[in-house]
Structure formats: structure tokens, C-alpha cells
Image (cartoon, rainbow, N blue to C red; front, side):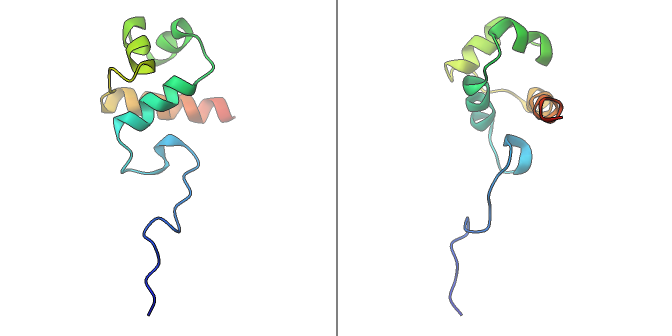
Length: 78
């Protein structure tokens, strides 16, 4: 039997679709987000300096911030 590539069936729709995503994936989403740093900081409930550090990929969010980003992605799609 031929073996398919392990990622052949995976097409992620948003950052939180895969449990294997790391904090870097979330930081890249923040980096590509069109919201300003102040708006994003208020929506995520974190300090503005962490948002600016995430945009520079200098700070990787922990699990609580990752869950807030997932919720933000879901609410922005509705």
C-alpha cells in the first residue's frame, strides 16, 4: 500500500484548527492582523507592549492568550 504524505489531508482553516500549532503560529496571525496594536491589546486583554513584541516575533503567547486569539478569530468570522 502506498503511503501518503502525513500533511496531505490537513488544510487548516484558522490558527486554532490544529492542536499541534505552536505559539509562533499565533504570533504570525497577530503579525498579519489588520487591527492596530491598541485595539488588539484591548480585545486580548494584554498590554500593548506584548502585542508589539508578538508582531516582531519577539514574544510567544502562552495558552491563555492563544485561547483568546482563537475566540477572537471565531467572533470576527461571524
